[in-house]
Length: 302
Image (spheres, one colour):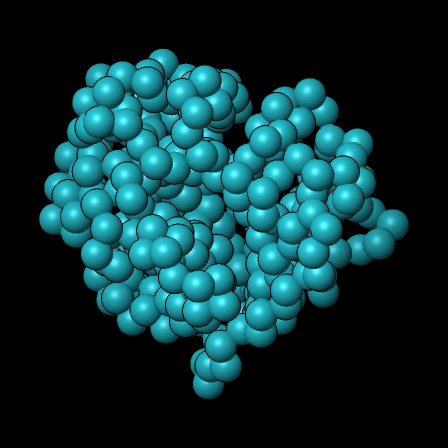
């Protein structure tokens, strides 16, 4: 299966705070917040949702085509991705801007506070998905991940015009989208990926109920953290798959992207759906931590 993964390419600065953010907040002073958290660990990793998912697919033996915008500092990152098996020929390189930056602090309760600088991602809407498809004989599936909103909309419309199956994964960019944009990204998607919070935000943004969304998509996949994942289709009972047990909970950054890699790999292998969920969950829990974090890993978010 020829899979194109569109979305952000970023460098992630991930910090750990040995406490709880909520302990530092004063209920009647939330309109004037000025806080600094002393982190006890910093990891600088290669990340961005599209790069993460493409890397995971490549580690599972596929050759995904990465489609996104990167900056003048992308040479080493690009070489690392190509060595892993990712096709980066369709990455747009800015001559003046740096690759996007994601700065995230995680507390001991796995809550996160993050800031994202778009950098070269601002040029993502200039990428021609149709031209990228022509260069490789077309795509069987296009995942539209978090990116510059204009790029997400353009890639979605291009895939629809070509009759290519679409996987909608708006994730954290839902907060940036207006009602009409959110509907355009989701409507007629073959697959829809969200987490629990994003599923509620999606209903709010689109103005559609859960049933109305299911009437417009093929399969809605919702990740639920330690509770596993749910798959829903219109007119069918919801399938809940538990997470694979683990003795140690690692940094949650990147696990959503790892799950998507496992799920799409199972789809490309035409595995039965039950087995595919197990593969995706196992990759999310085990392979990602073992294979990716060992080597200046990819990580989440946009």
